[in-house]
Image 1 (cartoon, rainbow, N blue to C red):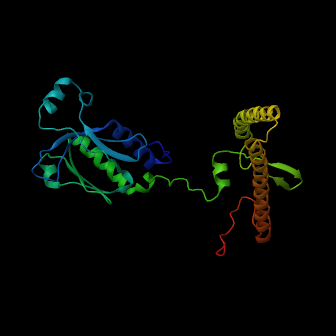
Image 2: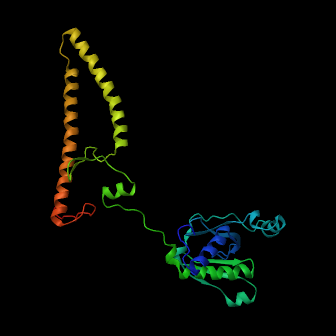
Image 3: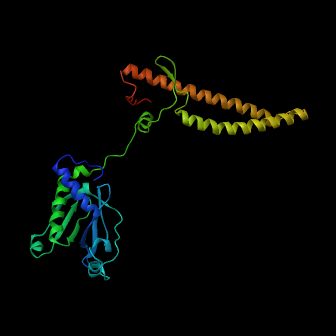
Length: 273
C-alpha cells in the first residue's frame, strides 16, 4: 500500500494482504443476472492500494499453460467490461455462506457502501480463508484507505508556497516591500522580458522605418503618431499595474496589522466588499 505506512501488526497484515491482492486472485465472478453465466476473473487492487477491480484471467495467472487451458480455454468466459474501480474505503463487510462452505463452494460477498455487492467464488479453501481475513481487516480499517482531499488553496500565497514559488519583491526600506515582479519570480520575468524584448525590437524597427519614410517625404504620418501614443499608453498601464498592486498589498498589510493577524494568515471576507 503506497500511502499507508506499517506502524503496527494491523498495518503489517494489511500491507501483506495488499501485496498479494496486487498480484491478483483467480475468482469466479457471479453475475446478478441469472441468465448470464459465471465469469472467470482475476480480482486485484491498483498500485496505490486504494481501488479494487477485476480483469480477464491470463495464462500468467496459472502455474502451467495446461491449467489455464483446462480452466479458461473455452467460450464460457467473456472479456471483462468493468472500467471503473471500486474504492476499498467503501468496503463495509465481507460475508460468506456456511452451507456453501460446507459444500466446498468458496462463496464470498463483498458489500460496498454506495456500490452494488460483489459476489465471487475463490478457487480453493486456502485463498478463501486468506481473502476472508484480509477483506475483513480492510473493512474494519477502511478509514486508512480514504484518499486525502485535493489541494484547494484559498489564496495565491498558498499556491506559491505549495509550488515553492518566490515572486520578485524589492525591500526598499526595513519592513517595506514592493512587488515589482507583479507576482512573477526572476526566471519568469526574464522569460517574459525576452519575449517582450523581441516584440518591442520589431515594433521599434518598424517605427524607425516609418519615421525615416516620414522624414524623407516631409509628410505627416498618422500611423507614426499612433505608434507613439500607444507606446506611451502601454508604459503608463504597466506602471499603473505595479502601483495599484502595491497599493493593494499595503492595504492588506494595514488590515492584518489592525486585526492582529500574521503575514501568512488569511484575511476574513467582508460582506460589504
